[in-house]
Image (cartoon, rainbow, N blue to C red):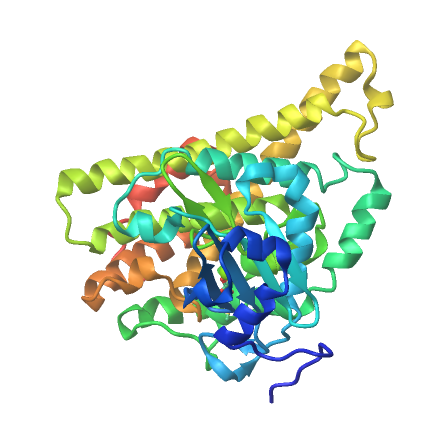
Length: 427
Ligand code: SR1
Ligand code: MG
C-alpha cells in the first residue's frame, strides 16, 4: 500500500504547482508577468516522477515532484517520495563542481518533495536524438568530463575523509531507489519476477541467462562491489535519458539515484546506452551507408567518453595531489616516489576501465530482459528485428562479463561491438 513518510506531503496538481511557484519571487521573476500568464505542461517521460514545464512571458522553469509510487507503473508499485530530496542534495553538492554541465537548482521544498530548476531549451533528451540518428559531437566528451570532475571531487583523492564521510552518510540514506537499482539491475534479469518485461522472441536468451552460473557469478561480484566500494558520489542512473543536449551543450539531469559507489558504474551506464543505440540501429529502416556512418559516430563517442574521463581525472589528481586523504603526497615527494605515483595513478584508472566494462554489460542486460525497457528498442515494431538487435546486445554483454581478460582496453571493447551483431535468437 502507498504510505507517505514526509510530513505535509501531498501530490500537486498543475494548479497547485502554479500556486507554489507564485510564492517564489525569484522563480516568478524568471517567468515574468503574473500567474494568469503562465502555462504549464506535463513533460514526464521517465519511469519515476511528475515533471512539468512552466512558461511565462519572459522565460520558463522545470518543476518536478517525486510521487509516493513509480509514476509509470502506478500506485500498485509504492516507492518512497523522499527521492527528490536526494536529487536536490546531489545538485547542491555538485553545483559548484560540474558548473554548466548540470541545470541550476532554483528551489527545493522538502515537505512537498518538489524541485524547481532551470528549463533546458532547446535541449532534447539524448536518447531521442540517438534514435533519430542525430549527432551531438560534444556529448561524450562532456559526460566524460562531468564524471571525472564529480568523481574526483567527492572521492578520497579530492576531499578530506571528513568531507567524504559526511557525504557518504547523507547519500547512504537514499535507500528506496537504491533498492530499485540493486534489484532491477542485478537480480531481476536472472530470475522470473512479475515486473520483468521482455518480448517472447528474446525468451531463449532470458532462460539461458537464468541458467548461466558463471554469468550470474560475475554479476553478483559486481553487485557486491556496487554496494561495498564507496569510491565517489555517483549519479547512479546515467543513461541517455538522463542527459539533455544540443549540438553545443550537454546537461546531466535526474540525480535522484545518487549514491556512493564505484566510478565505473556511471561510466558503464553511459557506455551501455551508447552500445544499445548502436545495436538498435540495426532494427531501424535507414539507408545502410547512413547507418554505418552513424554507428561509427557512436563508437567514436564511446572512445571519447573514456579518453576524456581518463585525461581529466588524471589531470585533476596531478593538479591536486594533496586534496584528499588517499595516497598522501608526502610519500611520493622524491623521484622514485613520483615514478611510483605515476604507476599508482594509471593502475587506478585501469581498474575503473575494468569496472566500466562490467557495469556496462550489466546495464545492457537489464535494459533488455528486466522492467525498464528503453525506447531505442521499443520503437522497433517488428519484434523479430527488435529481438535480433537485443540479442546482439546480450551476446556482447555476456562475453564482456564472462571473459573480461579479452577486453583489457578501449580498442578491444570497440572491436567487439560489431562482432556480436549477428548473434541471433538462439543463445
Ligand atoms: C521503476 S524503475 C525504472 C528505472 O528507471 C530509472 O531511470 C532507473 O533506471 C530505474 O531502474
Ligand atoms: Mg531518471
